Image (cartoon, rainbow, N blue to C red; front, side, top):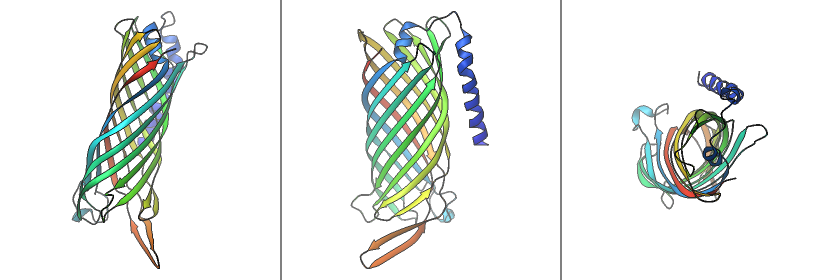
Amino acid sequence: MKSVWLGALATSIALLLPISAQAMPNRALNPADLQAMNGIFIGGGVVHQHYTEWSRDLPNASTIADPLDQEHGNLSMFRILIAHRFPGTGGWGSIRYDFIKGHTDYIGHTQAGVPLDTTTANTMDDLRLRVGRPFALTDNLDLLPFLEGGYFRWDRAIGNGTPAALEELYTNGYAGGGARALYALSPRLVLSSTVDVGSIFAAGMEIINPLNGTTKLGPHLYAGLAFQATLRVYGHWHLFARAAYRYFGYGISNRFLVQKNLGNTFLQGVAYEPNSTTGQIRTAIGVSYHF
C-alpha cells in the first residue's frame, strides 16, 4: 500500500510540473523569489537528534522493554547547496550535501535485555538531488513543486571503550517529492517553507566492529518540513537562516549471521536489527551567492 501511495504522489507531482508552466502564462516569477531559487549556499549549524529502537517484532519482544533504547543529543552540521533555474526550459534543479557529526546519549538496553547507558559517536553523509518547475501564484508568491532523490550514510559507533562497544554502518537511498512556497516580503527579503515526503529504499546495515555481519533493512516512510529566510545584504550576496524537521526510519531486518575472529577462536551467532525511527531538527545559518 505504501509503494502504491508513493507512486501516486510521484505521478501527481510529475504531472504538475508541465501543467505549472501553463498555470499562470502571463505572470512572471517574482525577481527576489527567483534569485532565492538560484545560488550557492554554504553554512553550518546544529542537528538535535532523537533516535529510538523498538523491540516489537523481535523474537524476545515479550521479555524486553519497548522501546529498546533511545538516543538524543546535538550534532554539528556543515551544508553546501547549489541550485539553478534554467531560463530556456523553465526547469529548476539543486544538489545538496550535509555532513553531520557528533555524540548522542544512549539510554536503554541491549537486545539481550541488559541495561546500558553510554554514548554513541555519529557520522552522517546526506546527498540529495531535486528537480522541479516553479510558477507564480501572485506578484510576491511563487510555488516550486519538485521530485527528489538521495543517498544517506550513517556510521553509528555505540559505547566506545565499553564491553558493549559496537559499530554499525547504515546506508540507504530515498526518493519522493514535495513543494516549496516562496514569498518576497521585500526586494531584499524572501521567506520560504518546504514540505517533502517519500520512502527509504535499498537500506542495509553492516556491523564493522568488533563483530562482522551484514543485513538488509525494511523500507520506511520519511517526511520533512523546513522554513528559511534569505536576506540580500550586498549585490548578489545574501545571508540565510533555516530550521527543518526530518523524520525517517528503518524496518526490522531478517535474522543474519554475525561472527568474530579471536585469534585461534572463531565465534558465530545470529542477530536482528530492530525497527528504528529518527527525528532530527536541523538548524543552519550561512552565506549565499545568487546568480
